[in-house]
Image (tube, rainbow, N blue to C red):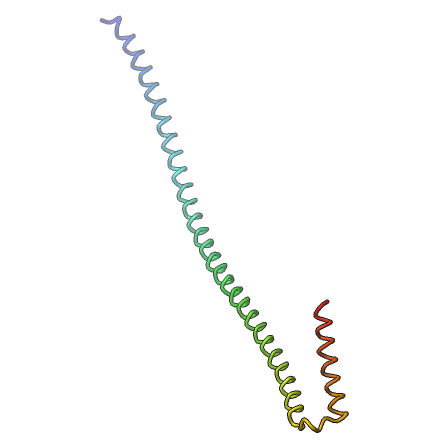
Length: 133
């Protein structure tokens, strides 16, 4: 039995060395897991902050899009107003010309009226010719 004691002692030493090696590996793994957990936590915090920043940018973009659409609508409204003003001014001119012609009796066509009519017809003719180009 005494022959087995050195064998058992050497076996126990090897077993002890293996257990120590496994324990060290476990401790190293535990430290690495802890570091990874800390890195994950930091990254989650960063991602949360960046998500908030992205949300703020989306809100700003939405606001600017609405403002651009409002400006486009305003521009269209202004163009319509200008068109209406031009039409109204043209109508006033025609009304004034009609009133001027109606104010004279048909039998009283004089050279001045004929001259005015010639100028009006000339303007109309020129506007039609210019519209062709």
